[in-house]
Image (cartoon, rainbow, N blue to C red; front, side, top):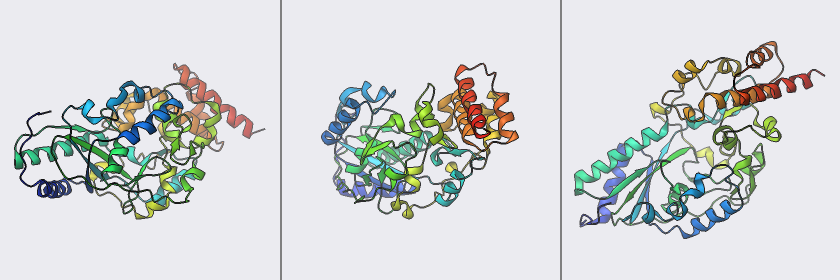
Length: 359
């Protein structure tokens, strides 16, 4: 990052301009924070020491660079955090989908185009607008692309508070949004942080299918369906398979039933609209995709990160949780002799569930 900062005559005016430029680029809100994350660093250390990160070793790999922004990007003085809403359809539709065991449930954030690319491009465009106004300045763009405590930073920047489910909640917009950051050397005025407004509510804790929220503001990722279906590369522990239901990529329950999401708005961003009928496809249809079809259908999608093998693993579990029908049994039997031991194991488990139903 540039050591010689561009002199800014009116930092407050520049910040106002940045808000306007961000809105033009499709962001719903921005906030500015300093780089003191000592409290978040302490919480992270406790979480890691408890082993709640499971196999996500990258959470501990970078040491204090995650919680000390100027170690990650020397010269960082402020962080501009931007919020972009992504909910593609009503929450009622999503809840109805969870209640239909023939259907596949994909986390709402992954129905459209991979958000990493979209937000990164918009943030770079925002940086260019700043450069056009004040000249060269030091910055780095991040969208889940480096060790960044994005929720803690966003909370300091006034974009919301970290709820009991550990997601960020905005009092006017709920929690269905993405975050991206500009680490910068600009001496901008900082925003006031947001206080928690969860009160005595336990909705997210009580609704979690696998009891992953072990206490308010404490998530054991090893029990979380998003971790089990996305992060975990091995077999899904048998104790959690029934609770996964028809969720084949991620889980939204803690957001779907959060009272604050009554304020959430549908996104009008075309790239977040569902693609390839992933919002309406049945489990049997998706289980029949060969790898070439899967690669085509997931091009440019966040789903691509789990690979075809884990895709089949996840659907096999969901089919094991479905009602017994000839179509479900036939679909599972087609994969019983899979070359993948991981897939075959979960198919065998699924067929055993249907044997139990018929006894």
